[in-house]
Image (cartoon, rainbow, N blue to C red; front, side, top):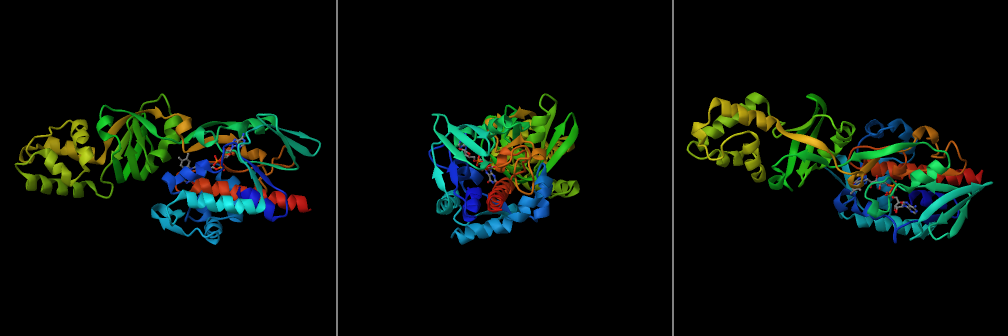
Length: 397
Ligand SMILES: Cc1cc2nc3c(=O)[nH]c(=O)nc-3n(C[C@H](O)[C@H](O)[C@H](O)COP(=O)(O)OP(=O)(O)OC[C@H]3O[C@@H](n4cnc5c(N)ncnc54)[C@H](O)[C@@H]3O)c2cc1C
């Protein structure tokens, strides 16, 4: 849609073809319905966090995070900065972003909804687009912005890969990038829904530490999700079938001597009271029972009778509560798809295909992905912006 706005502003007759009954369904559920549309990080940092980040250099500089914030503020959507550099609409409503975007698109372009593009061909200089009922449209230029293959109910079902392939493009096979992980633990029923803030998770693959992330996480009925987990999830996917463990440091801000001192103080203070009572000082309520079970301790043991060995168990479990990892959830549940149209086959200065003149790509259909934080939407907007102005420039020459 940003591509349509830019091409339309450049004087071209532009049409957005949307398969669903209305556009932006995925956008409306982003950031848990709040839409974390960009990040305050320096653009050079954006390039670093992306897979194939170098490819995005030109587009991110053409339409940066501050340009995107101004774009929405000029459309009367005030924006706010939250923890981790994340930008949201001040109303915390993704629908404000969606409505502003649709309204602006309609000024420069037609939007045809319920148009499910089934195939695209090119004869001479003209593209022909067919929908699944053999309705046909033609155009001088096509921008493929069909997204990835996750959350297929939103309309992103990977069709763009098939269109790109039909024009000779190489597709890096899609795999889940930001996806909940599956844990093998009998405690998940109790832990389901528990959120942990300011913790540090580490991923061990065959006892070797592969990733460490500080932030928040949440347990689910069969595993875990949340920003830290999503960030390490691609590595979990890549190591499927190997021996993997998730280790949660519940007190990452403390050193071992500091935590030991604190524990000794609490145990003394709680004297005749049971261990589970003392742990309320150190852990969220929902974690106490599973913590005691995982650490192999006794719930009702009076604090004054806790042995040195048991103290060690508490300490090491606070620093490293371990869960066996069995894998990742299906790609359909991924926040972002890894893989897609190979970046080597797209001009990064214009987003035009290197194989077919007049064919452009933008957004998640391209083989780019980043951690959570607003980076993926910024990339979709930046590449869309560049594709739009490139089409307009090309057709004015
Ligand atoms: C639950 C969830 C939360 C997320 N939260 C965030 C977040 O807070 N911040 C962030 O940066 N990123 C977030 N993302 C990722 C982000 O939403 C995507 O990276 C981004 O939407 C990609 O934009 P896109 O325009 O490339 O594709 P999409 O948003 O997927 O849009 C593709 C569009 O193309 C249409 N389409 C597909 N095939 C056809 C066809 N054959 N014919 C016609 N139309 C078709 C689809 O219906 C869809 O409307 C989230 C993703 C999910 C699933």
